[in-house]
Amino acid sequence: MITLGVCKRCKYAWKPRGEKPKICPNCKSRYWNIKKKKLVCSSCGHKWIQKGKKKPKCCPNCCSGNWENNEVSDLKKMTKRIESFTKTGEWLD
Ligand SMILES: [Zn+2]
Ligand SMILES: [Zn+2]
Image (cartoon, rainbow, N blue to C red):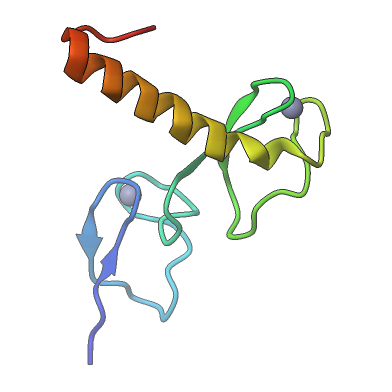
């Protein structure tokens, strides 16, 4: 059985020669098998892209171990934006 490699970054599909391709032949990403994840630090607002499979323990900018809380507040912000958009027809900044 041949399993096609599909890059989660650029959606490129190819036939891998080895069992586990190290990089995507199209975008050369070593993390082609891992979905790109945007992370935001709740302490300093630093944004970065998760590189490994595991979530980082602390923010690479301010070293806060509590950086993750932002996901929730971001969602709340987004909900507020959508709410106001449906009311006013304009996007808040
Ligand atoms: Zn790719
Ligand atoms: Zn931070």
